[in-house]
Amino acid sequence: MPPRFHSCSCHLHRRGFLQLLGAGLTVTLPAAAFAQTPAPSTPLIPQPVPPFAAPVAPAVEGKTLLLICNEPLAWQTANNYMKTRNLAGKYTPVEVAGAAIGLVSDQFKSSRAASWRTVTAAITPDVTRVIALDHRGCTAMKSAYDVGKLKDGLIETETHRYTLAEFRKQLLARNPELQVEIGLVGDNGKAEMFT
Image (tube, rainbow, N blue to C red; front, top):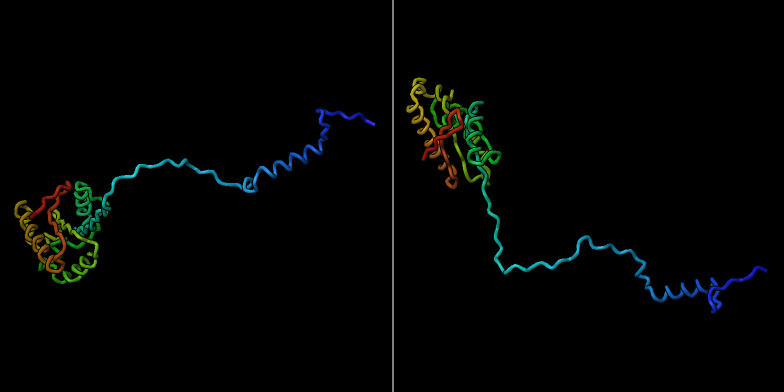
């Protein structure tokens, strides 16, 4: 018979020790201790409570509609102007032959009703501002008015001023709540805005 080795004087066998240890764990550790609970991802830090303030509604800005001529040159110059006003990508363009000229000139009488339908269809309820930009050297100007007027910059400017003012008057008769800005843009993207 092999000799038995005891490490303590209490003569506690290994099996008895394990049974005693298991009974102690069962008593001291509740079952909930074995359930996995997620650790909080970030410690909870108390935040200072701000003083009472009335809620502020965010400012709502209406959309802008840009009326331009359908010539490729007009698109680029008008877009350059809109960049100077920090409106690049924040407007809806509407192209009509001659811009304001195509909407008010007698020369465009046959297409005028269709052009007005295009403009009014683009004025959705959230549009609050219309910017109408005619451009220098416009082919529609040559067609609608005397070509000689384009040779004199002052006469060209005044003709555009008249057509743009007439456009604004007719648009406001249809939609009086709109803000309408009118101007003449040059090849360099600089615009002369009219009152």
